[in-house]
Length: 215
Image 1 (cartoon, rainbow, N blue to C red):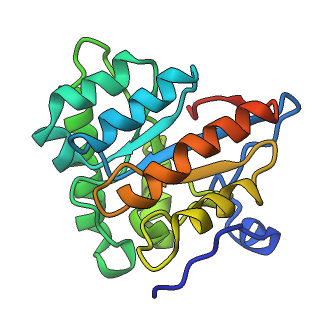
Image 2 (tube, rainbow, N blue to C red):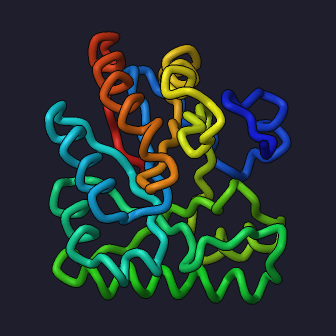
């Protein structure tokens, strides 16, 4: 199993302070995020669960998936959620030359704009796939006006070796005001997601957390 951390510690946040790991606030706001869509059926199910609870989220979309599924992408926007850049081809920054990574990210930005002309979306948030990005890639993206959005709480829904209950506990045991929470609207994550997301949403509402989007 690949290494990842569920709860981002303060040392990591300090060492990489140019990235957004959480968004501290006094209103008990949390920030749900979904990576890797839009995906047929999965993203639409996520949108339905969010709508039932009047919850908003930020979707970090892969450009290639936007191009293949423009109607689902438009539905995300129409239902009041925000859009983030997740590169066009889900690139691992640690294994990709800076120029290639930047061009791929700009291709995603172009796809976002072309597929949302009615809403004129100019996304200013970026999440590196796998959370892997080099310093030079980060510098250039931030010079273009992007905020690099990481996370405070990782559900690990993509990890098929963990149980759906463990996925749920990863979130509800670690969430606090200001947390940026990561789920994935992907086929790979769907089994854990379909168990954990509704229960997470209900837990957050019952504990008076407020859902907000990242700009």
